[in-house]
Image 1 (cartoon, helix red, strand yellow):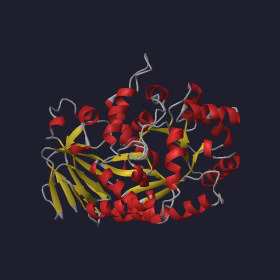
Image 2 (cartoon, one colour):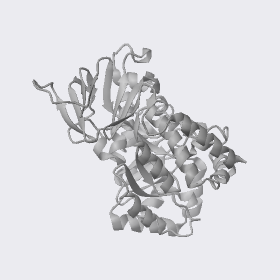
Image 3 (spheres, helix red, strand yellow):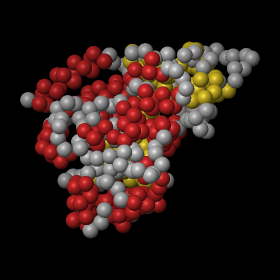
Image 4 (cartoon, one colour):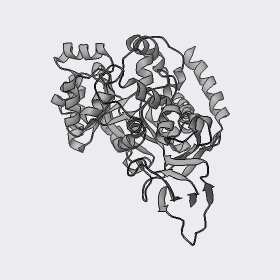
Length: 421
């Protein structure tokens, strides 16, 4: 059992109030929160919170983890040229071993920035799952199938397999995007969603040309098309959601569909700025993701929070702005509610997916408003500990994932040479 004591806890259970209280962790879950009792049990470790803030871990709700192989490889391009001209030809060369190695490389970055859960979309899933389970990373997988797949029923097999492989791993129905899916594939995913009463996830409305192309192909915007196909009858989420009309947002709200915004990637690929303030006004749940490290090029959730808070009101005058509190929820509790519901706050019975923030860093002083400090001036430099499922995987610059970072770096360099030859 691990004890946290003598410092502020931001539980996010009810609002943003900080309370000095004990938090105990046992067998992967939070087993006690409250005042210090007169008699204490024996602990495996006791962590003094003096000068530190304990809070739920960050949830990175849109990632392509193995794409750390292509970090800084194809910069300065718009989405179409970047994806079809540069990235896809190299992705065809990736092996399960490559997926395994470069997923581990990304996990190092997640942990050092306080991310305790990721929602990933990729292929060669055995390599991805092995990397996550070996490192102790909590991950949900989103189906990434396209119309070019020879057998659409692989989605069903993946759903049944990866929802039963580990408590750290879950699988959600999904497909890559409307522009890489034919009607047959989308109807098949819709049938699976109906059968399992399961939500569906996909890239959507990322660029203006994507929306225009969908209108040309189907006579509808992507949200209207998906609604008509029944894809969102059991809710779900869309990645990016940059080019949304008011009517589109009404559909998302009605269908209980969340928008996972990726501000850095959308700017870098010149896709645009998501209308987060308008989505908030419409009552659509907002989450945050980094996208992949090939289009970002970092996996730093603090950068996403900062940009999301500043960009959301840029072109939407007269609409209530996105507050720091909204952004922090998007990066934590909202993301948990999307696919990691048992790690949304610090409370008894919840998963012990926790982060320690060093409040003695210059960027975190003075403490007029800790939430605003986290969003506006915080950085991964402030993260001093990351715990997933009750296990400390990162602390004060050291990783505890069963393998040294240097071993991962060297293997990644070797494999990258083979990929790019």
